[in-house]
Length: 431
Image (cartoon, rainbow, N blue to C red; front, side):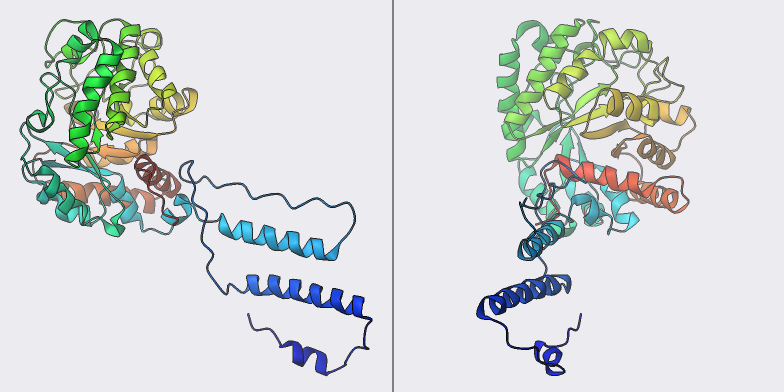
């Protein structure tokens, strides 16, 4: 903005000399007006106030000071303060993400599978903005931490990376050789107190964090008392703490808190509960118990976890009788209506692997399933380590961007999903 100088404005007609008190008041008012005009010209970029309540949240602007009588000077001061406050609170993660390309937003919602013995294989995907990597394997290399540090250095803007694995205990452990072993959850639930569960899990989590793994796809809070190893027909068995809802609720929160105490982000799974499932969705179509039963038996452990501050929840690929015919991970009724709406969960929602045969049996390719999952309210999608991972990642990202371009997926939903990925890592885009 180009303003005429004070000298130019007063040269045409010089005003009569004012008494000292009036002259001082005029100078004060002129200075205040000039301050507002200069602020409106954008002569500097004020620092944005960081937000701590998640994407899209902004601290409220302070109210203008009250006054008992009209005062031009007070009006100017209040207006200046309000203008400065409004300017300072306009930056949020959501407003920043709105400026990202659809492709970069899409990449943020993808967890790329990679072998823990060859994490550099995901370098190009991480460099393209993938939100996370999912480690596969059964024995981690001793220098995993340094390898992951190198991988993280390729993240655009150095915004960090979700490095996740399945470290549940028993037969589901990826890096026990580095971090120590835990027994099957069924053993923990039967023989350890919640305090012992938390303490032992925290010990493992600290070593996970030291190896640069910052997310664990655990605990399993499905209620399943079947005394058997997980199999094609039973996805839980010993992976469940107990067949008793109360025991699972307490053990699940203890496990979750142990991970957090060790610096690892827990992912509570598999919503809305796989206990008593008809089959293992990895190998074919599967159904949970009826929704009316789950509400009494399977949902309380998730409610307890949410109340205890669960940062992330994984949704299963099972159909939930009573809540539609799509797998839960692709169901807006399950995710948006029940988990987000009625249960009030505000954190990160991940899908179970979209490579599961239950997904293809429902008529979805992995890319199409990714779009449907995001549309349904999920924030991050996963798939298995098989075939050409680079090509698969690209296909998923393209399907998401095409869906936005074709108005089949709201861009606001994509921004919201990317925002949840950043929020779970406590990333603030507004310095």
